[in-house]
Amino acid sequence: MTMRTRFAPSPTGVLHIGGARTALFNWLLARRHSGAFVLRIEDTDTERSTRESIAQIIDAMSWLGLEADEGPFLQTDRLDRYRAVARQLLEAGLAYRCYCSREELAAMREDQRSRGLKPRYDGRCRTRTDSVPGVDAVVRFKTPEGGLVRVRDLIRGEVTFDNSELDDLVILRSDGFPTYNFSVVVDDSDMGITHVVRGDDHLNNTPRQINILNALGLRLPEYAHVPMILGSDGGRLSKRHGAVNVTDYREAGYLPEAVLNYMVRLGWSHGDQELFEVDEMIGAFSLEQVNESAAAYDPDKFLWVNEQWLRRAPTARLSPLLATFLEGAGMEGAAQDAGPPLEEIVEIQRHRARTLVEMAEKSRFVYNEPDTYAPKAAKQHLRGVALPVLQRLRKRLGELSEWSVETTQTVVESVAEELDIKMGKVAQPLRVAVTGEAASPGIGQTLALIGRAKTLRRLAKAVEFVEARIARTQ
Image 1 (tube, one colour):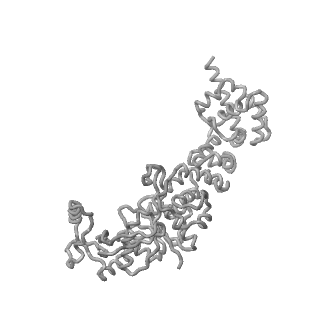
Image 2 (cartoon, one colour):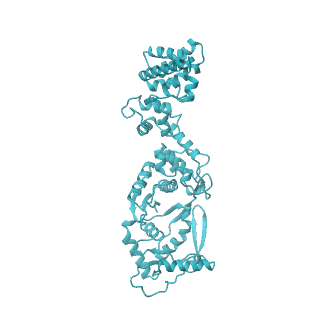
Image 3 (cartoon, one colour):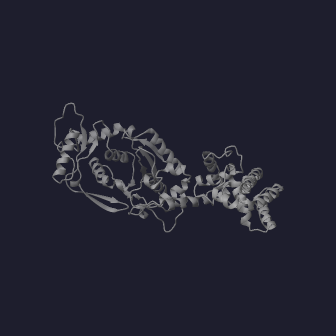
């Protein structure tokens, strides 16, 4: 039998890391076993589901490379099917119509609480044969009144539930829309899903779904409930722990391969290996290696993984991505190719940045002439003693016939030798003069990226700055 997995998000927001990890595990499982990965959109919550969220989820999955073999299928396109199955259960005496009002149900639960009982539906409409005029009934499934439900979980082993703890759940609301536990059963069966891999917050839903499957005489899929993801404080991962959705990481300059790499290690391991190409993930992934305990989200580790992928990724791949972030950060001239080839920037900056946003920001000096100098850097490096250094550099660099990393580096070194001062006493004033900051790539690399004309213009401005500073102290 061909393995068929599915990812079934509710379109009530963006794709979060937890959901994306579930999608990844299902996708990897299908790829590993030459199966099919199905995308289903569970949009029956019409008050909260939006077309915009559907588009965002599909876009995020596409960015990650988690393309579905089938779908997306929308549950709202299958309403007639759910209603037909509900009728089938009604006709077989396996479901019934419930006319209880919200007020009646609330009073029932309050009474149960007052008597120290677990609030639950008491089945009062189970044997009812009459209808209530003017009242739109819900349809409830008749949960078996005794016995056990054994969930054979591929991660957790066998988990047992007592039917006496389960009430008669609503499967069709009064507006004719199915509830979650009913629609997923119908969908998974109709779509031939063989493996249901989802978060462990759904484990308690599984016995209810198994009861419905058994009532309909349908084959049970294999179940695997992956552990939840916790934040650094031990609480469930949420916005307070930082970026938690895929779009946030995309906009923060993470690479999709880094996001996949980090996600796959949240609850799954393969020896001591930390970095995985997608093909390596496919070849190594198995549910047997998924941990039962919760995974811990570590933003610093996530950054480290992205940093490694920035170093690994081909320059030709990073260059157009960097261009997007440069333009988004308002780098003057980046869009008009008014700087060096982007490939040169990538090669120099890829070992100095952890994200594409950081790479773009650290490359600002290439395009934008500093309006001011960092106060601490100017105080330390643009003092009166730096004036002859800057003047000599401006003259010697202006005489160069070839402008490159090597030739500019040689000039800086020769000026230090001529003035009999340490290299840092030359390179640091020059760096602050042309970038406005005390940190940049190697000085030859910095000058090569800025270019001759911009370097000489910025040096002239720095000379004027130091001269004015000297004048104020006299």
